[in-house]
Length: 117
Image (tube, rainbow, N blue to C red; front, side):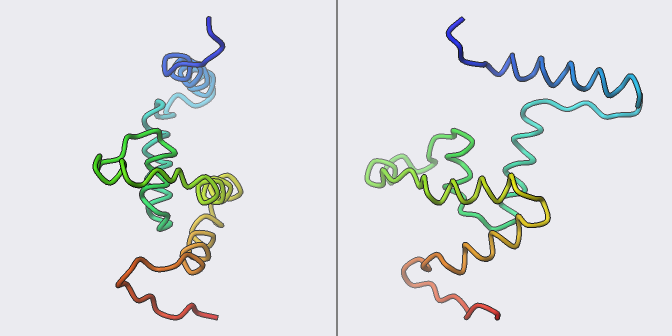
């Protein structure tokens, strides 16, 4: 064993947890690693975080391979903020995303409305 966990390990742990929950709640619906990844992606997209940050956090390859050659930024500081918002509190996620979006400069040619006070 190389010390790294695998998708199989994660699925096995989730299966064991679901089994334990079902002992007390037989109607509990099963889920897997990809369900958690989908929830993570959907929640962060709903909160309006940058799609590049979300995809990088899911270890997905960039969709535009040519652009990826020229843009080697890993957005570590931005992703750290995004992940901390996700971890802190589900209610705070959307509020945190709006705050970060207001602080982030708009892409060239895009005008953002003034932030509400």
